[in-house]
Length: 507
Image (tube, rainbow, N blue to C red; front, side, top):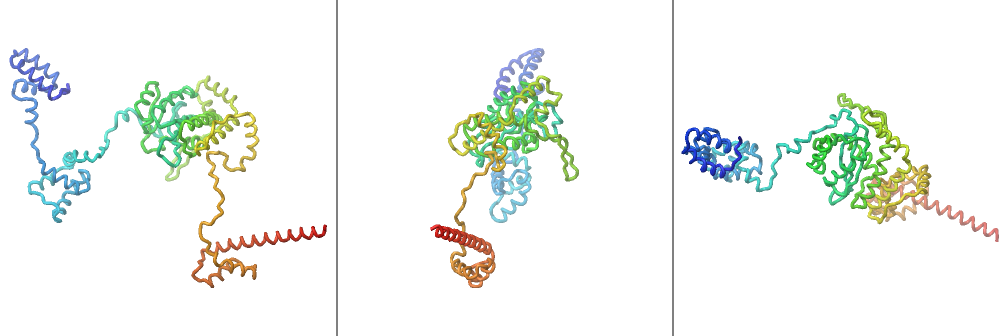
């Protein structure tokens, strides 16, 4: 039995049993000794010595302690040397002592007693760390965790190569932050789940990054999936990797695994959907507050059907590495719904339900709803007052008629359009030809066929240090503008003279 009693409890037990043991008969001593050994955890021979009065548990322990080698003077000297080494670890300080001590003594910074020097030089690295343990803790330095926590021991690691073509129901889960360019403060997140076998993707908005909200979202999502949730693979964030989600999965027969820290390719399936689905729909705007969550929820409800039923995607078939060359081969592109219909692991009832939903869906109506909610999200991100739009039938006909000319506007997704910049009509640099431009105009009046190079050479001859070769293009642009203005004047003059002549003839 392991010794679980405290020192005070063992002392009280010895005092209570010792007198009874010493006055008992041989058979009674045997029974008392067995009980004492089972309760205290002592070895039988040690218990006989303690109960016979030959030794006390505390005195015996103190008497067997090894004498102290390093006194307080050695410890103080070690602290000085540790500070002089810029607080290095024990192994590095042990290797530095033969160099550091003579150097400090040579420069009259340190003078060690003859009894301290050999002890410092003989001190091991582990002893150095042990003697400096209390000193380091004052600075608030965190100890490195060398052993895994019980939670990490209970959750196996799964890499990208460990999936081995699973059946539908094994999903990867991740979060996408809608923080814009600033990561501080509170902002909306998107919870993304992707099925490995079919590519079926579910997106849910979260008001804040919280483990309880993730657990509620997973619990509510299970009923809407077209397959049983059999496995869940997460990263090492605390919103996923916690006791609550682990117990939830274990209690419902869901295999719970995690990726390796700082290895994003372990979750390559969901990371791809973060960009191809979430970022493609929402963009990089910063979204905050319940209004943004409501708009995102409505967007994802339409996108869930559009992406899973009408968006074919590629799936990696094999990857072959030959030296530095990597060759990837893919299956033929299919929608997640089509992959579920072709899977033998999906029941006939689920397949019939999927075909029924497919027959009822209108892809154009889903796309129009996505575009409408994208406009709404942009207004929310820009801080404009906006209400949730309501779709109408005439809007759908107008949206259909606009598809043939939508390409002329360039980017059709409102969440990805670049902000419109006002036209710039001012100069950002001083005009180097402002002082000599009247002279250039005189030259052009005399000889309108002069080129920009000829004019620039004349200016450099008259002012050798005023103009450098990099300003030639500026002069050519000014010359082009001058010729355009002169042409407009000539055209206007022709129209004016023609109008005057015609009016005179009529008169």
